[in-house]
Image 1: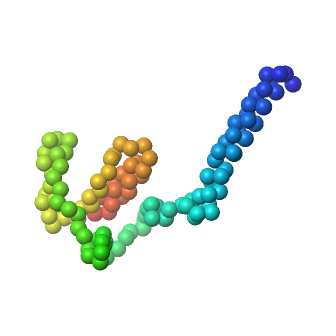
Image 2: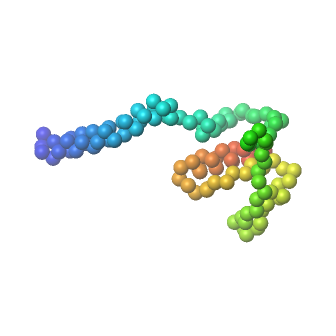
Length: 121
């Protein structure tokens, strides 16, 4: 075995050791605090032939026992048209205020909204 191979193995071992020293305590802490999976941040997905009951009551955000609706809004879209909540009176609509280009949760949120849109088309 050449010296170059020996140094490679020592280097890899050192990286694994440092990783373990830094991250294993954090992983153990999250597991002991039951912070591994947050169910409230997970969305359920429909199976291809599964349908949801569209006749069920609408879900509202409840704050201090009072059902809240989407606040009035006014935005300018990519075509420079003004869009408000009045444009959607009498229609089913979902309002989600988030960035569409973030690299983490945004792609998943966009996909979930596409599923909702397809349900009501």
